[in-house]
Length: 348
Image 1: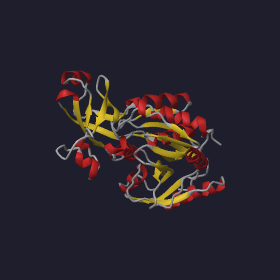
Image 2: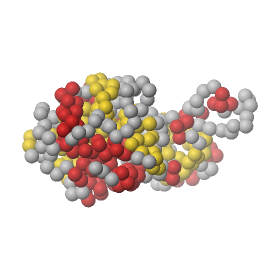
Image 3: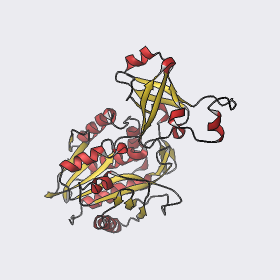
Image 4: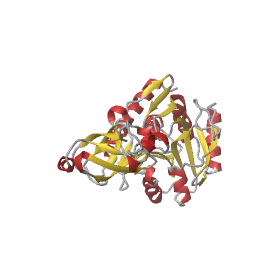
């Protein structure tokens, strides 16, 4: 049984390390240090994945468990006059999710805070902002970041086209709602906490286990595709969030979710059966779902033929890709289930 406060604290640490897709240095340093402290072999590959290896009793077989370390955000398109910066989405982000407020621009030399802005409210139909009050949601093309810096100052900080934007750090602190955690970027920082817990708890797995903090998942599972192309695996399991919505038969609570299908295809029924068997052995209820607008490291890697068997284990989450809310018990049960799976003889 995991202590919820301990789990909350490690997720909070992870959330507070910025990691927009492709600019993941801050979270990389933290993960390398934490895995090393836990005494496992760890390295970074050429695709910017962080990989920890736990040797198994049978070194001729291997499974990988991935949790992507990148977060959604925005990317600078233009740096205009009077300190205004225009951005476009990076991954599945929407400006109305963040609302007006502080965002961080991760410059080459300095992080600059600015205010994501939509324009004033006290306006008539003569102003373009009026339509956002009455008809359509605000889009990135209608928003800007107000920095009050000159073009010269922004250039000196290394703010340029391609600079990443993420939610401001002081807005990122998670909050506790009884047994739930609420925060930006639980997708997928909570899953990184699961990887760290497995590195701590799994000592003698049945086969070699690779714990992969994968890079650039939100923009096409780039890190996972590189890893699975270069590492022979008998199975791949992706850790993810599972959206809570009326269209899916998923309930909030402690029970993790095993996916059968998503937008990229079906998952492996044999591997899913092994996960369900492990759950039954430890008397853990699990939920099953097929998702439409969703993809994971595992389904994308299997679709492209990099792995023969893939599965996705997830925890139910409200407000996905926004200010997310998840039950700490479901996150803890993902740890318990995967520990049992790693220690069970793997049938390939």
